[in-house]
Length: 308
Image 1: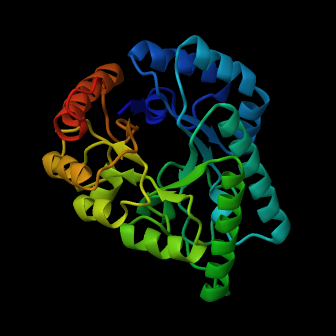
Image 2 (image 1 turned 180 degrees about the vertical axis):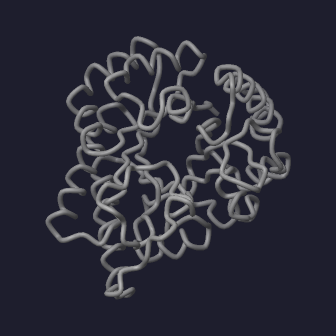
């Protein structure tokens, strides 16, 4: 089971969003850290278009450093908004450009946060990794919100996105986070049922799920057919943070025992860091987590006689 380096490593070092024009340098940096599998991320319209226009240079860099990109993050917060038809079509066109880039790079899937809550957002609200209560304080539901109409339109939009992803042989992973409609196992299952697309997957993020008191063990059991990509980091259960495993309160032996029981064959990415976590040495944090994770995989998941 190959361990991936999530893009949070780059975000932690260079801010959000990190300069997309430095993508080749980021690939080199992650490869030099010791990873052969990594996330890349296109955050918003200009970054999605930049990666598409420079996809050959990115692919050449991946080949030069012996790396692969199993998942490309295509970040489009407005995809889940209640938009006029023309603006929704524009979002789906950008999503397709992201899928074309992912396919060209040899990815297995694309990833984004789940749809945001249907609030009245200011026009200048920046794209964020997590939309916490502090950022969303004072935002209200539109008085004209018709929930059933909104829900059906949202499901149709994401059904269209899943169809686009499927056209390029990709899964569409929804990442759970604060401020999202799919922040928990229950909410994702409800949304997945409405969308009804086999390639809609849940990107189980151990830290974010633990924070909202989702039972990680039960989530794995309930979502076993909808999870093929996991973000690994620890959490105290008190605030948003992405700690190295062992620095928080997650029961990792139980987590990996359940992974073994459900015969998990998907991918695992280290997702440690972020400005909210306060890690001083990111390189050491990722190397140490990779060593820890290799031992867990070898003990719980690796078949006898297999080579890591």
